[in-house]
Image (cartoon, rainbow, N blue to C red):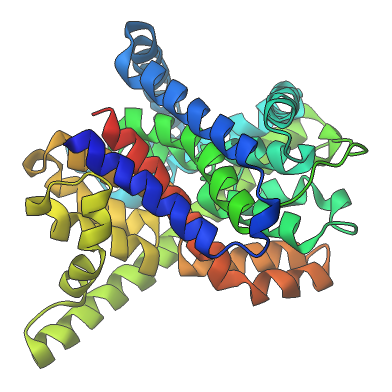
Amino acid sequence: MDILIGLLGVIFAIAVAYLFSNQKKNINYKAIGVLLVLQVIVTLFMLKTTIGTKIIEVVSNGVSKVISYGYEGIDFVVGGLIPEGVSVFFFNVLMVIIFTSTLLSILTYIKFLPLAIKYVGGFLAKITGLSKVVTFNSVNSIFFGQSEAILAIKTHLDNMSNNKLFIISTSAMASVSASIMGAYMTMIPPKFVLVSMLLNALSGLIVASMMAPIKEEEDENINIKDISTSNSLFGAIGDGALDGGKVALIVAAQLVAFVGLMALINGIFTALINISFTEILGYIFAPIAFIMGVPWSEAITAGSIMGTKLATNEFVAMLQLQPLVPDLSAKTVAIVSSFLVSFANFSSIGIIAGSIQAVHAEKASIVAKYGLKILLAATLASVLTGTVVGIFI
């Protein structure tokens, strides 16, 4: 029964994408089928095989070990400010982003990540028949944030069709940045962070290429030099640290604003109608949570967290989920955690449009025009990822 409900969730996500397609007759069904099969293979391998679970364990432990070295730098800077045994979110979670961003910048400068992204993206293009630019961008978005992923294909923006622009914007919004991965792993089960990062690349392509179909172009060449702007190793280290610091401060500012506003809105709703805004979100998103595989007894709670993520951001929602993990079923934790690992929220529309504005004002106006549809596509991608993970729990 659980599998049937999960399949209903997959059908729901694909059906909504089809409903909103602007060129239904041009949908590449072969690509959709291949990507869905890849999702099943990846999820089965990662969650249901001894080798896959061992890989997740090794990677999770490795990331935790690497992060522990980052804490050495944090302790050097703020040591003594934090009492023994006390966890301060800004220091223990957000400042880790500075260290992981630096590592990401180093791996980018030495061309390890760009080459891996180029060839994996090329492989996806070959087996699906999709554009090399959109598959490259999809894989690139696994590691880099919304802004960086889009800037890496900036030389292609001039001749980019509206549909292709829609797909790369959706892929950027449906993904997360690897520099923030360590922070997520301190808040929700690490294995779902890792699995979701891979699945989101495929989910974004499935949904977006249905809503905005494109044809493969033979003359696309990807230049990996567009990914890194650093001109030396130490420059890359400095750039990574500064970029990580900016992200940490931006997230901190957003959390102060969004958590405070959510508390204010909840207070107003409770005073006026004796029900909080997050509870209302729970009732709205409960049916979606249920068809994703969440037990109905937990659907309202799960829906509240999912709605909070859409209205604010994933960090606020993860903070809401974190204390509830011991009391929720394993399936609910898996589905909701996987749904949260993406940038799909209202503020991301402005971030993506702003990133493109920096290099191509005309294309930025198109992104802003279709912003809500892009958000719908990215949210459906998160629904698809969460549903697929839930089927195998």
